[in-house]
Image 1: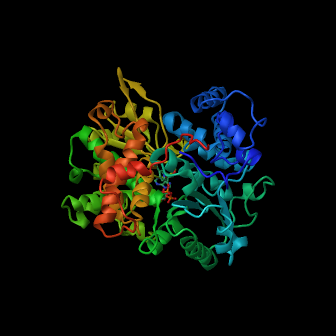
Image 2: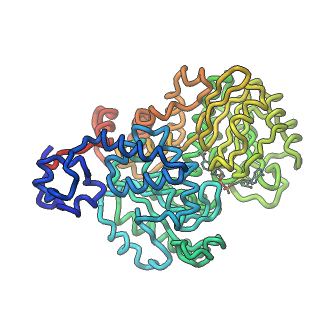
Amino acid sequence: MKIDLTHMPRGLRLLQDPSLNKGTAFTEAERDALGLRGLLPPHVQTLDEQVQRFLVNQRKRSTTLERYIDLASLQDRNETIYYRVVTEYIEEMMPLIYTPTVGQACQQFGQIFRRSHGMYLSEKDRGNIANVLNNWPRRDIRVIVITDGERILGLGDLGANGMGIPIGKLALYTACAGIHPTQCLPIMLDVGTNNKTLLADPLYLGLHQPRITGERYDALVEEFITAVTQAFPKALIQFEDFANHNAFRYLYKYRDNVRMFNDDIQGTASVALAGIYSALRITGGQLRDQRFLFFGAGEAGTGVGELMVSALTAEGLSEADARKACWFIDSKGLVVTSRTDLNEQKRNFAQDQPQMKETLEIIQAFKPTALIGASGQPGTFTPQILEATARCAERPIVFALSNPTSKAECTAEQAYCCTGGKAVFASGSPFDPVEFGGQRFVPGQGNNAYIFPGVGLGILATGSRLVPEEMFLTAARTLADCVTEYDLEQGRIYPSLTRIREVSRTIAVAVARVALERGLATEPVADDLEAGIEELMYKPRYISYV
Ligand code: NAI
């Protein structure tokens, strides 16, 4: 393909533009045409050689945080190499650009900061957000991930340091679903932080002030939503790592009018439900016969619960019976109707049961077939709890979804060992395979990255005006259908990450169909939806400039 060179940056400016830069891969002809002669070493390399050079060096690093920094610098230098590396080596790179390493990167964001990436909007921009958004050099933005940094993974309030999360998630949109990197925009909405360590840290890069709350906070979010939907009318807005008290409110406030969703609530729900569907292919039961005991009744936990209720009612259960199949334990104990401290999300799952303080007593009474951990509290699935659950179910399903790894409710090894190898296990952050009783178990990773990139691509392909709940139910079923018998034989309830692009495309097609059937599409779509969507997917390779 020949491109118009009139507006092409030349020389050093070209080398400094990560989306155009080819570095040592600029051909002889390009070096002549674009004023690069003398600015690069003479040997012309291929993209594959550049990838290998990066990997050889990066793998010598002694810590994963150093590898994260290498990757971030590469992303700022040359997006093509970066996405080739991340796409081709996704199993190796995902834990670096996302959980668990991204958690560490966020904790030390101020120290490892090199170059700004994405946009920072803050209290200082109140009344001026529309103008600030115009500073972004690109107009055709299709996916925005925004956080206010108040609940970063299970690590709590990290303020502006939370920017690592939108950056990482958008890298996954590109790597997993081929959303073009120039169409992605990470945004940090800095409203202060209540993290005293950060406030006292001179290297902290966010506003050194406590969080604004209440009406002032809501007004800022409202201003953002108004401005962003005007500046980038085709963008999908993903809310990420907002604290519980804001996450649900904004989801309910905006989802009927704005092309938005909350990944912690809806993405987690979808990936967990998919895991349950696949786990049932191993355990042999029906969804309607399961009893789910949730640890953690927050965004992730009740999000999963609500989608589970939708799935159960779709199988013919009454809503009341579906809710009776989902018991929740939070920091105060079992969620029951006699409690007066429950928010709306918890009240929806309050059981008409006596309060029971001891978890073992709850297990005795409820006889769960599945434990779903989304408490952010490590070790909550104690050996006794795992053993007791294994007495209630032939093959107990154990999901320790809390991130990062240090917050998981139990390790993979604990899940397998304490249940005599009977558990079907998945976690939020990756665990290595476990040898137990002469068998090898491959833990599943209930990673939202199986869901949101495909959902985003389906929305991009159709221009869906909204993101209805049905899309997450559909995505869950589609993801479960992608799991092969071979995966299940190894105890793996999610497809191998090496198939993530194919999986995302399949989910995108299913989501696009929902948009079309619901009359939500605003863009013309190809007759062959699958081929049309494949065509849209960015592939990291160089194009010829001359
Ligand atoms: P949240 O703050 O909304 O909810 C936490 C819940 O845990 C609250 O209901 C709290 O009462 C409860 N809790 C605290 N201590 C407990 C204990 N000892 N036993 C039982 N419950 C307890 O937080 P959110 O957003 O729901 O996140 C929770 C965890 O889930 C985090 O670690 C987060 O990283 C993880 N998560 C994982 C995802 C994934 O793997 N795909 C996606 C989203 C969140």
